[in-house]
Length: 207
Image (cartoon, rainbow, N blue to C red; front, side):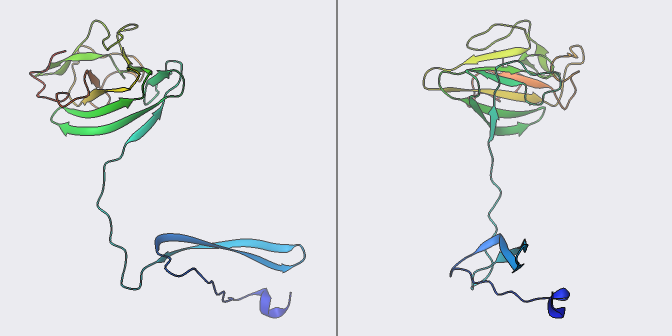
């Protein structure tokens, strides 16, 4: 190539449509210097309006889309959830965090059975001292199967249920299901309902 193209900087003018504003944009361009000599390049930029920067939006609560499978999860799976029919989406939304527990709502599409396997054992009775006591049998609107699996079957219009994760746990029920032994970080406490009463004071809730 000629000497002025061998090294150094080269100015490029980019024309954008009027009124373009974005905190982060990527501009991509295509170089064609000769036959067989061509390449792409790009740059990340921010474009502010003429009257100043775009204000930062406050944080907001997100929901998590969980894609279920048809088979129980393997040991160590983080979500431990599967659905029938295959591939139904279950939305999990944080509800609240209180002393000893964190709570979520699960919203399930109509005509779906959800199987939720706890990371230790299914716990259905709150205890004021140890957070939860172990359940002898599973529970849900369609109970069945191993004691550490919650079965929830919705109506044709859908439904919801709630879960609380304990930050205190009963060391007499260590559990070995799904994700290994129970710890303060992985204890799951299912609570039926998914309504306003899901996370009432733990000493008064019994299902």
